[in-house]
Length: 131
Image (cartoon, rainbow, N blue to C red; front, side, top):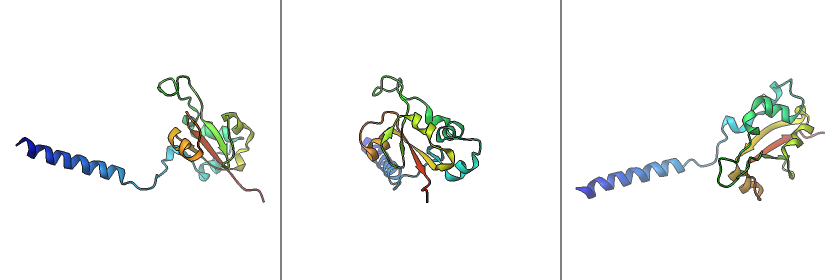
């Protein structure tokens, strides 16, 4: 009798796990992206930093003291148009009208895509191409 109860339970667990992992490509949630439409709508912002401050202040939260990996709080780093990773203050020098969109990568995605360590994640800023 016990054997009969374990098999359906095990089968249902395997089914649930396979359904959860069969999502395919990663879909960006609204919380991870400041879209081009949002950038255009934020007329009072002067810099990329202002855009993030007004539209997604959670991007600027320090991460760390609650983590076993990061003992002290750290802010996300920034990459502009796929360039070198820099401190977050670099966004203050980027004009808001030059920004196409801004995306936050969590630590794991940032390390996988950019290499190196990115304890608090990375903010990717994509700029308009000047012609």
